[in-house]
Length: 457
Image 1: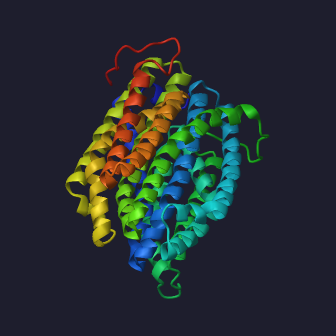
Image 2: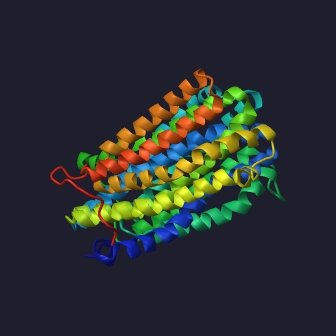
Image 3: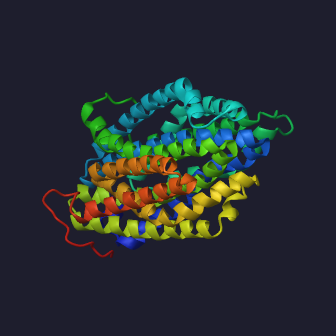
């Protein structure tokens, strides 16, 4: 057994989890900050540009979450379980199947967004200049959808072996380079022409292209646990099923966040582009929670998957609850800070009065519910490792129903945007409570009922 797998199975849970998660959390926040960096610079192009990017952001984050958190979680889980049972050959075969899925789903993403993107942005409240900006940015960024899928799939392959450092370094260095590159391409400098919104999209795609190339060199050089063949493996249903049975169901959870925010964006659009920009800017903090918790959830999923592959049920449960506790504390602290000091966040992206008002209402109402969302999301990643996604998917669907349906009813009842945001907060709480209750009641193991939450060790 290689040292990384042994550490996942035998190392003390809290120190092992923190050691794996610490660099991962920092880097995942940096990756999420890429979108915020874009927003910061694009906001200097005017309100239409800011509103346009706010319209595209939920769609971009949807495919980011599906490729990294959902399908990426399926890849991580499959590889971790294969290594946990000592089957390295199966893990190597899974790498090529992950590549095939990434290319196929990347092409599908590009086709869907090019065909239906403009109509979607119009339905979400895009008008005139903001719609034109959204369409341009969307067409450019999604023309490289295959790169986004490959980057996140390769990162999941490496994380599945228990190596969080390589994806962390690639992401960190890429984000550092992107900080100066983005404004250079947006505003122009020296020999670089002013590209505006197109420059922001180009910078992001360059990041994914170079990052994917680095991952390819690392994986196929044999420097890590895996050594897949240079010749593509023949596609088989069994490896694809191992990835898809977790990844496909996990996509429901990814969709829940984006549908919830997308619908709320559409309702906020009734107040005009400034309201869309205000809610979109405030909700970016909610989006930031996802990669933050993913930074912790990826090692939790790897520990759970490896432990279950080795038959260590109690260790898997302790790892899950430890991760949920840490995630809940961190995200609740962020939510409370945002509720108390909303302008500290919102003022980074503009000074429009309506934008600040709507964004403040969102953060003050929804922010205190962030802890439920963080803990629930950590348990969702743990469930990916366990290969049991039924209840997390149910929780995600209920989140959509409560946020969208409850928000619509709030508007109809005259409760306005305050009622809409209250529905969003309640939906986050339901998501966390259901995921926790399902594991307590033994959803992972048909023959085992867990009477109480195990204490972390």
